[in-house]
Image 1 (cartoon, rainbow, N blue to C red):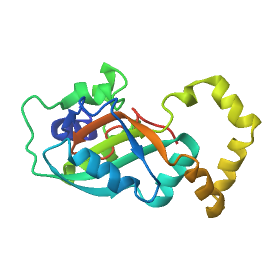
Image 2 (image 1 turned 90 degrees about the horizontal axis):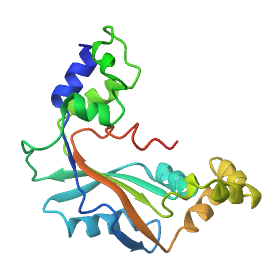
Image 3 (image 1 turned 90 degrees about the vertical axis):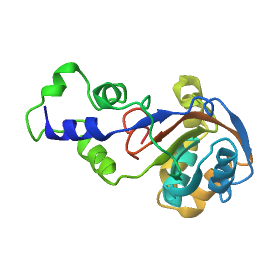
Length: 200
């Protein structure tokens, strides 16, 4: 078995949090969003949380372009349980193993970025990952995307990366507003849903 795959499959831990998924809450503004989400989540989980990322500019861009907050919090006071997920089956579910034959990749090959996943596991951290959407699934709707193109929003989003004022205006269009938790988990790898929630 490939070294990257062997190390990642041996060390990875993952606990889905279905009780958080599909929950909706109101966020007043971008600047207070991470603290508000942490308070909302802390009231529903028995662990201590601390915001870890991503940086402001990346959160702004994901909100402006996709209406998404993809957040990471460190978790204290948790112990892994026997029923927590791990191994090859989890890596396959998350897209790090595309087929059973990939368990036998030649040494040194890493087509699905297992290196990053293994580096995360080696840090020996416990993290809460939250995937939160302002307008769930709208980007899957061709008519919604067509409307963005026709009203010029796509062009404004592309310009926003070079103009902080434009970016901020696009971010503020999402607030105040209601957000829904589309996915949530506790894991020891920040990189765990690189394939599952790839949107850049």
